[in-house]
Figure 1: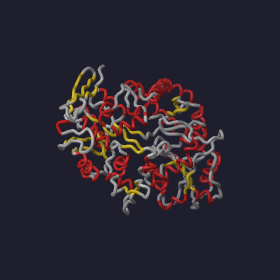
Figure 2: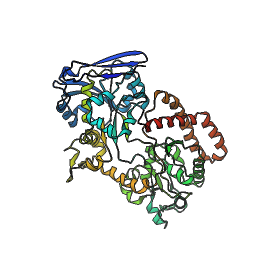
Figure 3: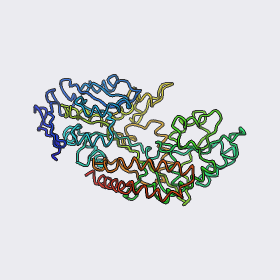
Figure 4: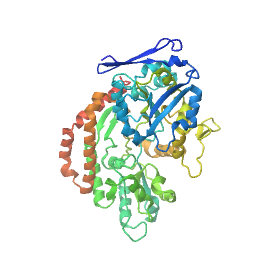
Length: 536
């Protein structure tokens, strides 16, 4: 197949057009770049001398207004002379319309906050719906080009197996997504029962047993919930207990990396040992029976019941779970010393490089001007404003010249305000930027400190990196992974509640092999190795 390439004359300011040629399964289409028709400027502002109007589609927060009304977006138009007709929709509404839109001739010029999965990026890139961007980046995105030069891991993360880049990323390196499951315990109950803060998995179990049997809330009823969690949630999983009880680091994907080797976690002896131990806890009444069925609403309500009943739990943020009035009753447990004497903090595969920030479609007749527009957003100060809102509205400089949050008004949360004023899209905030350009939000900084103290020192595995699988690899793993993960989730719940892991283990392992777990792991290893070589 002849891959699409971007051909640009030496200077678009002098040339009348450039040719973007593409192919898809033998069908060839071309887009003539007409940026020069609007007085395209290769450097400086405005980007075009005459106002150029582009249509942008994609997702937006349900709380966000039309982007055209945002102060920052108005400033972008004034600076660049690129006017945007925004057609971004709330995520659920957009999801229902996305496939039809991509298959139609009614494409917007740009997808912004694209809402595209990896499979959709690869598919719509290879079929010509999305333009390849690598030559446009090299020619018209000096800021982003420098990022890719300095950070080959970012280039690898956005490069498809055919060598093309079909979407621009959003990058936010706070270092907190890798450890989403924080374990808290009711310190007031520990004090009431004269128990120490648990440091080992055995001490933790002893505390749960005391919660179950010694009426720590003092109401004379056996209504205490020693431990509650959710399975397969973003931040309420008992993965670190599996690691402590069986020595097996675990995450939602059941896929980790150690010493350059991709491992499937849910068929190991350590995983089995961890599940067996939790089954014993369940049999002794230490685990909330609703842990395997409750949704977030039911789960979060348990921390705020009229009578305190919750002993210990996993969640992202303490106050969200127990409310302002009870935050002082709970403390972070952190990583417990396990049965093998080690502290093992399981690392999740949640990525800080998001591929789907922006893509240019085949409907766009002005890709050079569009890429110059996008490149401005990768300036770290502009990125900070795209992420958190404009300087003077949500951000201000401190005495060191670092942007910090202006406190939200009474009755307004920082998160709600952010959705009202920050359009997102292509942006970057590296770990260095969070030291020199923009300070993390206070709640993010608090979590960073907790990660640094309680989790990061005991990192047990590497996260699977943000690899963009090829069409062929996606075909090999997509259905199999869905089926495999469904079986793992179902067995995890049934084994703990029924105590049947020993009897069913061999059949389960054989079932996973029949479902292709080894081939899936090998495919992920192949993609991982390609990523380590820069995506090539």
